[in-house]
Each structure stands twice: as C-alpha cells, then as structure tokens.
Image (cartoon, rainbow, N blue to C red; front, side, top):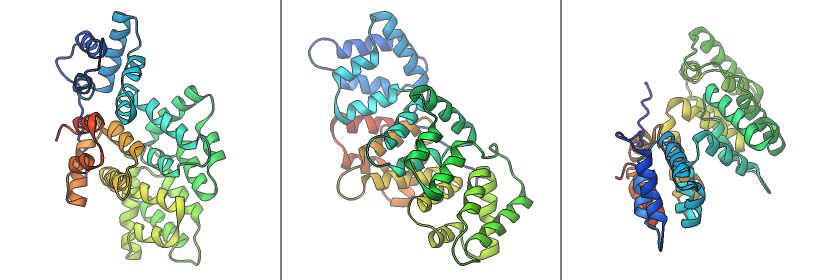
Length: 319
C-alpha cells in the first residue's frame, strides 16, 4: 500500500509577506491583542512563508516578530504560535533537547522523533542539533539512555539506514529468517540482530521483511516484538513497525494517548499537530477517525479551550 501524505497547511497563494507583517503588528499594538488575526495568518501560511513574514516584520518595524508574539501571548497558545514560527528541524531539535534536559529522560519523545525519520531527515537533524547546542546528538543521547534501546537509537542517529526506496527481496527473506532465529526460534532474544536489521534497512525494505516474517513464522512482527521485548526497546521497535506500515496510524495513536485519561499531554499534542501540519496531518486526521471512531477535531475540542483550541483546530484545517 502506497502511503499518501496529505498536509493540512500548504503555502497560501497569493502571498504578501509585507501585508501580513502589517496585519500582525496592528494585532499586537495598543491595548489588547487581536488573537484571531494572529491565528488567521500564522496557521494558514507555510513555515517558509512565516520566515518571510518574520524578515519583513523586522525590516519594516525594526522589531523581532517572535519576541513580540512572546510578549503578547501566553500559555499553551503561545507554545503553538512560537512552534509555528520555528523552522521545523530546529523545532524538533528543541524537543529532543528538552527530552534529555534535567532529571530523567523522556524516552517517548526521543522515540517519536528519531524512529520516524528517514536517513536523509536524520542527517539534517543531527547537523542542526550540533550547530544549535554545540554537542553531538549521539553523544548526549548516549549519556541519557542505556542498553539495547541506546544502541538502537545510536544506530539510527549515526545514519546507517539505507536510502529511501532501497529494496532487495532476496535480502528481505534472509533478514526475516535472521529475526526469527534471533527471537521466537530461541530461548531469550538476540536484540542486536533486531537492532541491526531495524536500523539499517530502508522503510520500504522493512515492509518486505515484515511480510516475509509473517510467511515464515505465521506471526506478525508486532506479535514477535510483544513477546520478545519490553520497556523502551519494545516501544521503539513498535514505533518503527508502525511507521513502516503507516506513519499516520502511529501519530494518530500518539495523539490519542496524549489526550486519553486524566489530563492532557499538551507538549506532545502541540508538537505533532505543528510538526506534521505540512507533511501528513490530513492523513493522520483520517486515520484517527478510522481507528477511534471519532474526529480528531472533536477530541482536541474536548481537551483544550480558548485561543489554544482555536489555533489547533485551525491547523487541522478548521474542521
């Protein structure tokens, strides 16, 4: 099945960065702030267009648009808007950094960002991370994680995965047999074999490997991972499998978990809606409804409020 990513935010045309920067300045001048204008403009422009607006704003008013937005907005609404104003790679680097800062490590965030990327995307993130924080991502990650989970993430971050589209049906058969021998066919699990195959093969190749695995063992790869692994390694392997089969289903599940039960994981909710809006948020929306039998909009509406809610709903395409 070919994955069709449908974005909810696309470049607006015609586009006038100067007019947008004027409107934004007017929305923040004087008493009170016109949040509606800010939402209307920033949720309907692409990130590249927002960067142009930022440049025009600075040239026109000799002020920093992000600083002005920060001084006018607050709370979760501010987090959405500032997220939108941040170039995507830099935004993901910030979330990786935050996941490893302070006491404890947010493994779920590391898994979500690192296990869902192609090799090309990974290279860009690694380069941007070191530029921004002056420390290699792999090095920091090694000090924050451990065991086979650390080994898997290190392989992914060092960019050993074959280029997108690389497939070799013969090799897929061999890999499936290796996975079977390393897991279900023996007592205990050889995690190194799982790590090597899951981190080196392209997503297209892994798709073939999983099909071959089912032919060979009569079980899905998910069933095998469930039996053979636990904790962070289990979650990372499952994330890889879901992203190979349907990235939208993976992110739909992440969104559901972020809103399920008491309280809302706003950081995850905002990150996914903001970071996927120009990639496949439309597809994620469809998957969410298919899996959970309710619209993503209705779930977000019941978990959020005010301008925060309005901004997220606008990013979903307003429905």
